Image 1 (cartoon, rainbow, N blue to C red):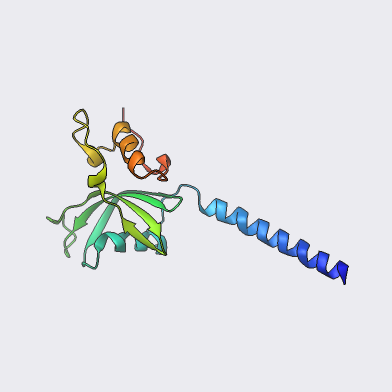
Image 2 (spheres, rainbow, N blue to C red):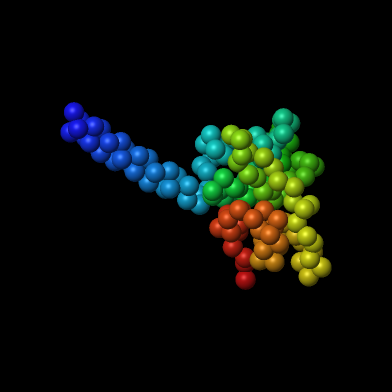
Length: 142
């Protein structure tokens, strides 16, 4: 009986360990593929119930955070007049939620704010959203 219990425990530990490893791999920084359920959920959160088509200019996801830069299109897939641009989203309670970027302090030396996502802006943003990983943001161009 003890052997059976030890065998069951061993199987459980191996199974749990492999699940943990696959969860860590899945949680690395990545760009969700076009038409993937994750990307669709992120864009649906941005849509907020509206019928909007987006061109995704940039998207990175890590640790339940996403940085996405979009251009909204009209039904004929021309650039729409609706606002697009960068957004920060957080996955909580089973859904993606758009974060309020107006909470990020402005910097007079960085007037573009989220539109530029400069190192200063990202530093200020991460002071507000402390668990947001730095690796989801675009690398600064030189």
